[in-house]
Length: 178
Image 1 (cartoon, rainbow, N blue to C red):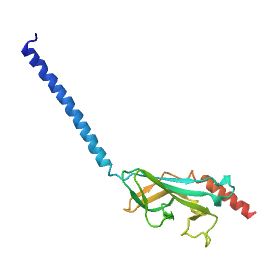
Image 2 (tube, rainbow, N blue to C red; image 1 turned 135 degrees about the vertical axis):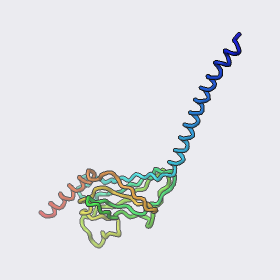
Image 3 (spheres, rainbow, N blue to C red; image 1 turned 90 degrees about the vertical axis):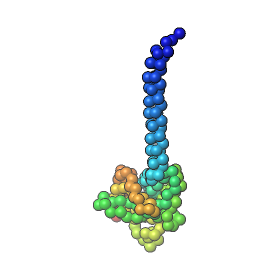
Image 4 (cartoon, rainbow, N blue to C red; image 1 turned 120 degrees about the vertical axis):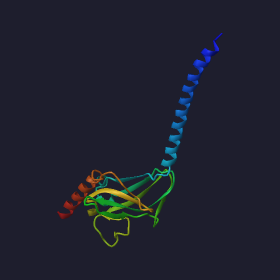
């Protein structure tokens, strides 16, 4: 039917091409698995600032602010410090873990550090409580989270999110001055 020389002449290059294709596919899958394994050891955290609109209640002192720390890693992390970054580059710790010490966040989970806006610093609204004096938000630029191993994660700009809070603070102060 077919000449054996013809079959051997055609079969050898076809098998060589199939071997090269499967070899490249195997190499690609191996490199992809290596990249996934290497990436699974990365610490991936997202930090977001959130603030409720005080205009709904008419009193900015009822505004609740929070920093949400989202653990996108495949393992648990511990957050040591959460606070505000100012335009001058200064870091100020203002959000404290509700349970004291480091806050553990499991893999693919999040935790929200809450604080309320205080009209002014008083003894009942000291730095140790979850009240933040209103002037703290005047030059707020970003929020940050520092993990227990010292790695620092900084959010996107929060100035647009705090504009309505600043406006409510100014409105409250002008009403108080009248």
